[in-house]
Length: 289
Length: 283
Figure 1: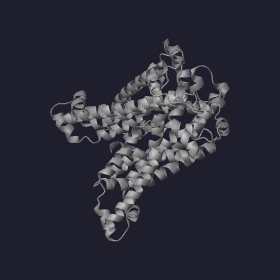
Figure 2 (figure 1 turned 45 degrees about the vertical axis):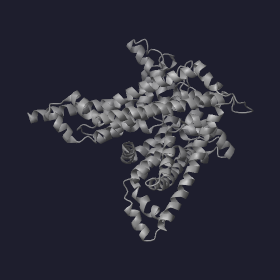
Figure 3 (figure 1 turned 30 degrees about the vertical axis):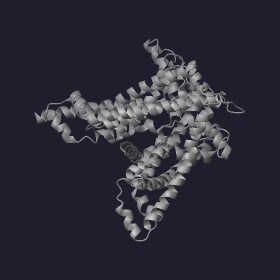
Figure 4 (figure 1 turned 90 degrees about the horizontal axis):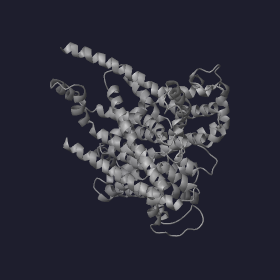
């Protein structure tokens, strides 16, 4: 009797949860896929257009450009973020005074909202950095980098990394704390120091944390939106238009509901493939060790 | 030899500490600048660096007062608080219960394992693909408002929260609930009186992670609540951008006001937040 009552209760709870989840996650996902086969503008009537939206996606230079920008941004940001946070984590994990205070300070960027931080940094890039550039006679910096089609993306990289480093550092620190002290003692007997110690002892042991960070970073950076919204709005001349921003901008108000739905479906597939690939790649590396 | 090593170790540690303290400049510089500009008058904003970084001639809260009026600060703050608190409470109650039902059932039932993977895989669905259909759907259901946003958050963060809770439950011995059942308690009661309290560390993690994501999110309220005339704190910064115009002092006062609540919260609960984040990451 107890077993049956337990089973029934679990079943009811699960059904309710699945119903809610289906209604607000899977259902809109299915609708998105359906819209992607139409020429819906967001209002009025629409026709089925089959795969035309998908074919057009690959011909549309604006879409192509947004993928190029988003990937360039995500890859560069992921590398910068992981290198700096790993260095910071090693520092914050060494035997220093004021360790917990320093850790607390380095986490601050993560609790602050991306939009407002974007506004603050865009002021720095527009007014502070050019003055420094002019004073030091560096030509590239002497005007706002956010107004420069070739450099604006770097400004967004700085803000994205500034915030993400906080989170990644904490994850690396918790990884470093799982490395037992005697590993280092054994390593010291073998004469391992500095870079060697890190390369052969520390790093292999924190690979699981490295892979979490890679996957998290890549996924979050690919979905970049807030910083674009507050810093460049996709400009100058669409040079910093991320995929999310393009879908939002043209899909919600640009009359491309159907077309951008196809773009979103493609984006979803890309994210799934990349995440699966990363997990598999880092997972297999882990086993070898 | 040993002593020499220790000495060298102490010296490098001191060097590391100094470097780390210098590094803090990158964290504090933008915040310092924002505070300084927020306290200044537009007439003090000269074109050199001092215009943005030197102390104001006198400290006045005028900009803050004005920013509060322009952005309807208290209402935005109220909306943000309401949405965040209700989402966190619901997430802890609903996802905790869901993880108990699904996590325990999947031990001996493969169908529940599929349900678990079904929900967790929702983590990879970008908001961009849900956004447009959800605008239609919430409007159709009459929940294109704060309530709708809360429901959406509950569902968006369910995959991660469920994964965290189920992972934690694996280490909670079943013998604990069986003992309660022998005493005649129903499954429902067993959960609330025994399992729910045991999961307390995970509640903290879930609450911290959910709260930080919800508080800072712009996209969901932007697309769902746009017709209601109501703002969350970050959304207000976006919507009043045009009203700030070139008055950066007013804008920065408003930014500081928007950052302050979460910053104060972080300073008070720093330990719990860092623990919560670490817990979530390791799992």
